Image 1: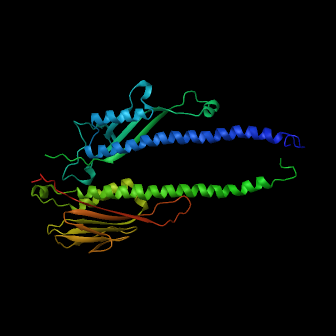
Image 2: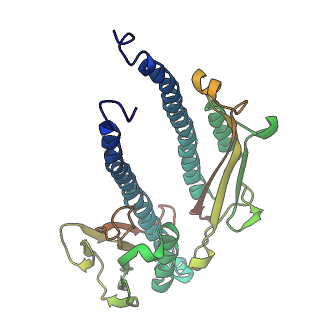
Length: 161
Length: 187
């Protein structure tokens, strides 16, 4: 019926062309949303460990290993086949690295300006999971995206003497 | 397409609908921004600032076993942390109370946008109740009451965050309190 009227099958042909475009747009959105969810999970993990750093003045080796494992479970990996890079440094001075041996300590009697501020950075890359339609239409070959998560906090670790 | 019998009615309709859709999208973004600004940034900022303020203890008093908070330094720490979490120009006003007890009294710092910060001293009493209202902290019991049996700080902060659509939005308030609790094995 539709195909035999005066307008012919133009409408159907148009629809088919537009459908492919619409599908690509829709699945592009879903792909983006999936990537953001993956990223948000990592962001929550970062915030959880930032709290840890706030209370301890550093990130101890055990927690660091656990954090790397949890990130790897989510599909994150280090750059060039290495490990995910995690750094805990002083804000404005990346040469001061806070470790278990050198914690960011808040001392009783210090001034407001002396409160140590810590910068927490996680760096690496992750693989995007895509729908086949996006894989067909997109140009990027492997879909590996670098990521960097950062957060700052004021140390609340007090040394008891 | 535009020249067939139906004319351009559908196209015109779609064009008319687009501005409404855009307004809808922006309103949703506005809502998300508001929740983030007040419930995340301001609330976390105020509680962190108040906690850091209570930490500004004079070392000599700690040695005596009765830690007292240094008023000026507590206010400095409060401002430093609050302004690092929320932009300074968006803070409408705040009231910040440092109360030491132990017969030492305390101090109230009041900031109203456009005016310099005012401070008034609080007379001493061993157990003091403060009531937190929308834009002030009053002496005495009230609907939201905080009792400080140990040295501590209370603050209520008003934030006026910029929106996407409306520039003059209603403001929001958040409050927080903190006290020093001596560890059991302190003595």
